Length: 164
Image (cartoon, rainbow, N blue to C red; front, side, top):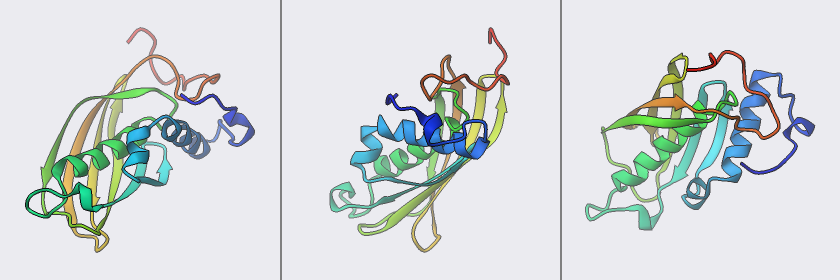
């Protein structure tokens, strides 16, 4: 993660500010999210909202947004939402259902919500919509918390049982 003193900018004891600091730390070291021109619109504990413009090069042979691009947006929203509590968290598995196509020039929005968290395992649901609010895809991610912290020099929340 990027070396920065987040305590100078955020109250890391406040869950909302901790989520914002975690998102800033993740984004600083996430070249894919940056390269795809994704924007972190909003984060909160267990929540993230990201947008991505569908650029010309993101389309497939059907002249619609490539499924891999939609998946990448949903996966990034998943990553940001499950790392908002200063526990480094990775994907254990995920699935996506494509409902409607995205199109060149659309702005897609992925809203990720924590559905369940127990110990190191979590489940997150992500909705991807276009700028008209039309459903593009539904993504479900299973997460696994690993040791360490998202923000260097801080302690993680004590809700994670040791030894699990």
